[in-house]
Length: 399
Image 1: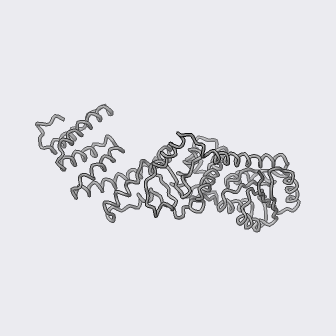
Image 2: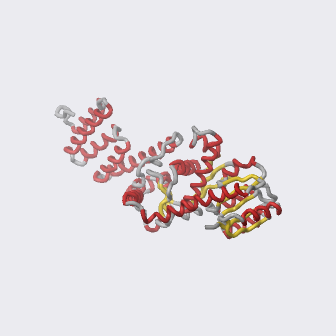
Image 3: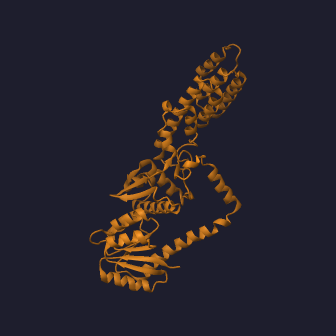
């Protein structure tokens, strides 16, 4: 296997030396040389080489700006910086360059860079070839992953969708995005929450216990893997991570997001059926399975929003006398906050109002038993009094 390589350097002797080295490199296929950076960028965007060997200090457009514009549109291209100045190393990796080579370039050093790229490409190709040979349990797991995604209308099925109320998933027409690591998934969740954030803030929140220098490399690696994962599902035009002025930005274009549906839901302007459909999107707490301190505030905000909307819908159903629909809604509230006395009292109230006192009594006994067993204390006296008032049989009840 060989790779199409673009070399960009404003110094003609450097271009000639690189061409001589690449001619003896087995992994090098077609080699294209440019001494004018802007022309090279236009050529690369149109022709999409596999690898770009890029000088940093050039007139007109610098190598860093070149890489930023190139990777924003073509994240699958591998960028290797070749320069005489090592002070640009951190910025190079922030832009998701795969390697950084100092001049004068030694053949063995360039060979290591190309071999690293080749190993990763070979690994990805091998995984794709082995996909039809997945074990039964792997297939079952994939089916479980797919079954956890809410059913959406056919008209929306071709629109890229982000599900973050529950396990974080990105669904594209080409399938589910596969997270390489939990940190890649967490970084995407972080960018989804912040929209725009500095490199230093990412390190503080997402990699709080890491050495600062190593953390920068971790961020670079995660951004690189995130861009690759999105590109593999042809999502780069819809979900894009950019880096500019030391700020990472997540740009979403024509993307449906369940969180936004929840945040934009207005109970006064929606029918009960629409409320039910929207609230059914809440499959669990925001980005379940990820756990870091920075997540707690947004997770709690969304949970409170959902609980408030659900309570509003339950009140509307009770006013309409639609107790059959109200009961599973209260059960949903109790699944999120199982020892909430107010939610439990609502369930009792609905059973009583719907004439199902036997079910109300059974629920009271079960709730009290579990409450005392799990929390090690009795329900409040006020709760017992309220129950007795509901039945209007205070002297006959022994709850």
